[in-house]
Amino acid sequence: MAQAGYKYLKTYQLSVVVYDLTVDFCEKFLSGFENRRTREQMIQAARSGKQNIAEGYQERSLKGYIKLTGVAYASLEELLEDYRDFLRQRKLGIWGKDNSKIRVFREFRVFWDFEKFPSSPNTPIIPKDSEEAANLILTLGHQASFLLNKQIKSLEEKFINQGGYTENLFKKRLEVKIGSK
Image 1 (cartoon, rainbow, N blue to C red):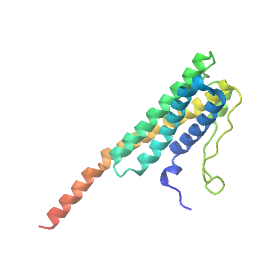
Image 2 (cartoon, one colour):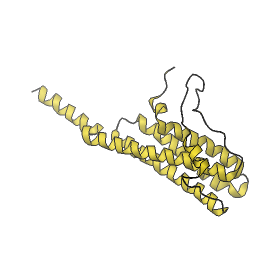
Image 3 (tube, rainbow, N blue to C red):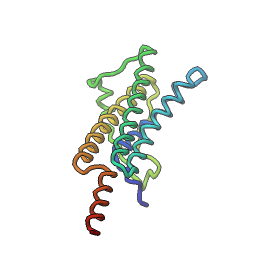
Image 4 (tube, rainbow, N blue to C red):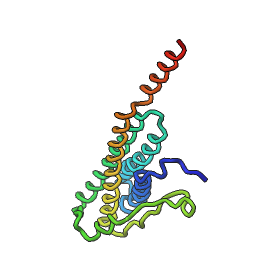
């Protein structure tokens, strides 16, 4: 069965993992009525990151694709700020790149085996410790943001070199007009 093209994007696959882990994180570490708003915001930011990649990919307009990919990037950055707030407010650490666990987290490679796992890519199990779990998701979120930034730059370059949807339709219209004379 053919999959939608965006499902092959590493940005989308990582965003699915971040979304799924965020749902697990919120259920595990932000339960209770007093955390309801934060929990909803975090889950929606993670969902928005994932959904906007999919929606942007389906756009006919390259300009629309760039815009929605930018929204995905901004949503993930909002989510990362929520994780930093979670750690700061609980006086827990935000681990640096040289931390041995962060190095292990950074070795994770997302892949989607559509035969074995048709509904989602491989996803790590969320750690039992909230500090470790938040740092895992921060690491994966940073990777997704980094790749989204590169994707946006690539799409902008494509737009500069090839033009946009409306511009190319106009060129074709002119060709038809000129050709019919």
